[in-house]
Length: 260
Length: 238
Image (cartoon, one colour):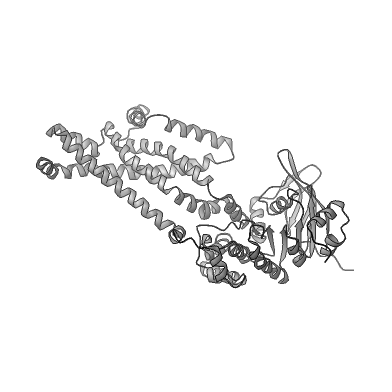
């Protein structure tokens, strides 16, 4: 009898609202080691909020989140408790996020951007941090721009630096919030290829995207977010080929991609 | 004009002694005002009302009363409570508190103007609020409000002349002393104006230099904004 592996990320009945608007209405999600989970769905369906709740850029209102073996928040019948800030920070450093708008530190060079988390958060000595940062930059083919400032880079280059910044932390999981939505069409494939590589190298990825082609090329698991729930999840073939949920079917048809 | 030069030779050194006191007053008050102003700014951005509210009162009190009244109150009223300050230190205290109220608003605006996306990125790397301030917010906000701070320093330098009212021997008071001997107000005040101008102008240059030194990314890109298509061409790895 083999025991099922425990998930790297486990969400149970996560709720989040902003004032009167409820964005998440009880989300359950399991992400396993090495998985590439893609969150798709209509705008306003709660995809980005879900991602931001996982690393506590936004605080959920209820539910249990376990990430990388640590309980970040827990819910029993009457009581909702969020782990201390220190636990949250430790978890964030092991599942950094890549943003739609890159969000590189504009007062630092490319190399300094990638070194920042290593020095400030992981307390790695400067020289060693520099070596690690260069390795990360090399993995995204941006080493030649190490001494440039972010405003001297194109969107695709900025996003690759942002990926290197996350990658340098040597995290088991990376969160991507619409990583290619702000890019020119010609720059999209380069960034997507890098994310695909990371998945192939065994990193666990959780990706929010609006790009069906990206989902089909890279996802292991697809989750459809709508109305604050995960309405359906499955393989690419399940979701794009034979969706059970009526809303998912409509969404997939309108996105213009048929069964692969 | 020959009267001007002969008087200048005789009284300029004496005026410069006063100018030195003016500089000391303004430098110490500027440092004090920056520290207090920064703390007040952070406090006013706090989520806790019991920190925010008293600081709002503090800022309003020091902004909404005239500096000269504040200086007179500090110099003449504090001794009633057993706190006796020399004119110089009473001046420093008054100028510091007054300036901190103005600077706190400058800093608050600059901190709020830091890109929320970059702050989210710092947090998502696992930084603590203190690390976020030290590594991201302060370097960006401080540089962003350098020109404004420079303006406040120049204003302060000239406001120091008010301290002559509480018998501090700074530049303007030295000038008054000279005039009470020579009765030549025009030439002496002209010298005072020249000295104030030189000090203010030099300060403005220093701030400009600081700004250029602390913003390497802007220094490199001004006027040579890279063209995206060129960058994309140059990069074959895409």
